[in-house]
Each structure stands twice: as structure tokens, then as C-alpha cells.
Length: 553
Image 1 (cartoon, rainbow, N blue to C red):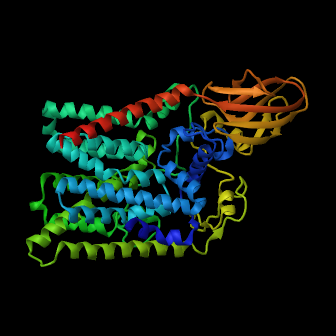
Image 2: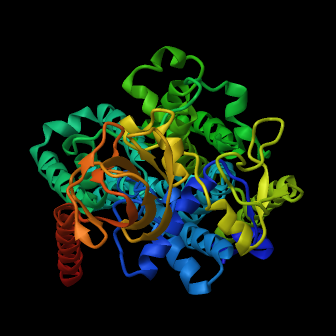
Image 3: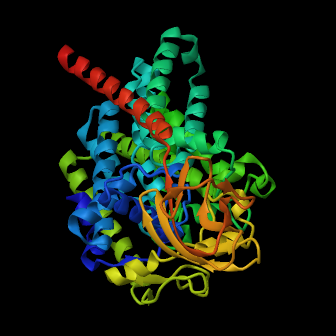
């Protein structure tokens, strides 16, 4: 019920409102939806979306949470409300995982319930849902409580399965969030360095790592393949501006849904305050969480010279405020445990049920107010009642923020017509002429330097092209990128010897004059097997572990 209520204002409107990453993720969802309809369930490249030219985004950005969105759209036959139905499922899972995580540590339903509620209706979580619509981060957030719970279990009772499941869920959702959480675990490990003197802990840790590697193979196997094995390098996501630390005032934006809304909010500020008040009574693990939360606030702040780190590996973080996902979990948990401890210590005569009821009303009411505030800020925005093209993109307001809404399926399809992103294309293709051309589905005549208009029909991991050649012995580049040599190219129904051009696209040589029908199909069964087999082995091991525990009980 909580999950439904939190998203009900958006579900009621049934419209989509502009979010920073929404168009990118809608393309991913549409790609999966069309592949599922065509009975293709693990596409490695994009052919129905992302301008239909074979971008490897479906292998390089974790797509697994997106299946829920694609299936919701297929089942209810409403692409916009399907997004909100999937968000409800996400929030329900997040609440359930957060509740289980805290209950397994504290053994208390009230603590577990209050943490789950405070965490999943926080400013940051709602902002990721609707201001950025960064689906990778949205789904990674539901796993972080389980990771910290699993780490606690490993440290204090040598149990490792929860930590492995949480880390696997993270890596299947968002690679950068996974790396941030791993950094937090390294810091917690330093706080508990004596644990590493115990060989039993090392044995459990190795088992956990092996299970994580197996369960997350769906993400890391294609990443390793396209990063280290293919002959063509791809373009990693970058920003037009440099890294910049966050001011402390911005970190604790309370009730506004603006650019600062991915920050911590009032709940985290109260968590810090109550932790300081009750610090002497906190457990060792709670003090560790407090120290780590403060460290991450400092890490992403303007105290760190982020502008000097632009050309280092740390630039992959893009936005330093992404580190705040760690303090959010820490201080949400610490607010709950310290507040309940103080209430009990000071002998306030208030029952657990009353605390839960009051918190539910206040937190859900606050979430609904933020929902409505966001809707009101976008309700009068420009409708996408035109086809998105290279020359006419989505509407942007004077502050440089996307400002539009999608009110029907026709406008939804307009949004999918074109995508401006250059991410994950071959580096050679991003030369300023090739990529803009293939985004328009135009080939290139290497003999006379002219573009070739082409008709196209996408299919799972492939495309059909039709075009005319006016002179014999013509060499052309097709509007389809290539990362390796696992592409089958047929010209007028016959296999054709093709090459990867210097600009990273498929090249055909020595064509004679006439009409051509070209079919391109990407087929890499070895890669798919390398992704799926370890994953299923991991699932079998996990089921065996759960069944063994059930039989013992």
C-alpha cells in the first residue's frame, strides 16, 4: 500500500514529466520491449532504439531492472503508466529489502519498518525516481541496506550470503553505484581490520566473492568483452563540464525538488544530530556507520579539489554528489535507532504502534507533497507533439533544464524517434561527421563523398537496409556500427565479405550499379553463453544454500 500511495499522483495523471535521463532509459526500455515481443530476450546491441544503428549500450549499461518496465508496458498496454507500475514494484522491493535488512540486525519490527519508510520516501530516492529517472541508481539504492546488513553479518557472525546477494543486485543494476559501495566496504573493513586476522572470515569472504562473480556475470562478462577483447574501443560517458564538489548548504536541501534534491535532506541532518547526542550509547557498528557517513560527506564536498581530478580515473563518477547514497543509508538508520533508544531511555509513554503510525502519516504526507510539487512545476510544460530530430530536440527552459511532458502514446513515440547521446559508440565513429550521419540512417559513398539515403527496418540485433547505387565499383559505409566480426552481412540474399571501416561502421566494397537489399545480423552465442551459464550456476548454488538452511530448521 505504501508503494502504491507514494507513486499514485503520477499514476493518476498518467503522464511522463521531463527528467534528466528519461529519454535515454526510455530508449533502453523500448529496445527490450520490442525484443521481447520478437522473442529475443537478451539483446547485445540496440536496433529498435538509439537511432537503430547497433549501439552496444545494451551490453555496456546494466539492463536487467529494465525488463520489469518493458514487461509492465507489454502487460498493461500503456507505456506511460507502465513506467509507474514498475516504479511501484521497485519501491515495494526496496521497502521489503530495507525492512528485512534492519530486522535481521536489530530483531525489531518497529526499527525495521521506520528505517524502510524513512529511506524509501527520502528526498533523494524520490528525486532519482522522477527528477533524474536514473533507473540504474534507482534500483541500486534498494540493495545498499542488504549490503551493509550482509557486511554486519559477515563481521560479527561469519555469515556471507546476504552480502553476496546485495553486491550482485548492485552490479546488476548500476556499475558506478557498485564501485561506490565497494569503496564504503573497504572503509568499514579498515574500521574492523582485526577481522582479517581470522582465517574463517577470509574463507567466508572468498565464498561470497565467488558467488557474487557468478550471479553478476550478466553485467561484467559483456563489459569485459567489449572493453578488453573487441578490436574496437567504445566511447565512455563524459560530461561537457568538469567535476565540482558540493557546498554544505546544498547538501541538506529540505523540502524542495530542484537541482539540489539528489542531496540528503532533513532526515539525514537529524540522523547526524541524534547520533551526536547519543554517541556514547551507540554500538561499534553504529559508530562505524556514523564515521563513514561523515567521511563520504567530506569526500563529495568542495573541500576535495575535484576540479583537479578531471583527467584521472575518478572522473567516471561524473557527479561527486553521487557519493551521498552512502550517508543517506547510514544516517537514515542511525536516526531510527537513536531516536527509539532515546524515547525508551527517557521513559516517554508512547507505544511502538503510535510511533509507527505518526511516522507513516508524516513521511508519506511529505512524500506526496513533494510528488505534487514536482508535478505542479512541470504541468504547464511543453508537450512533445512533434517528432524529435537532430535539428529539433526536447524543449529546454531558460535555466538549461529539460522542460516537457508526454501526455499520450503518440508523444511517447515522438520521444523515441531520435537520441542525441554519443555514449558507447565506437570512438572512431564519434568524429563529428560519421555519427551524425548514421543517426539519420544515411550511408556514405566513399567514391564521391556523398550521403546515401536508405530505407531501414529494424529486427532483433540486426537491421534490413534498402538503397540504390548509381555507378559500378562503388565502396560504401553503412549506417551501422561494428565492434567485432560477429556480424553476418547478406547483400541481396547472399553472404558478403565486409570490413570494419576506419570510422567504425560496416563497409561494403566494389558494389555495382543497382538496387540493394542488405541484411545485417549480430550473432555472438559464445558471449551470451558466457553471460548466462555462470549466472545459472550461481542461482543453483543459492537455491542449494537456502534449501540446506531450510532442512536444518
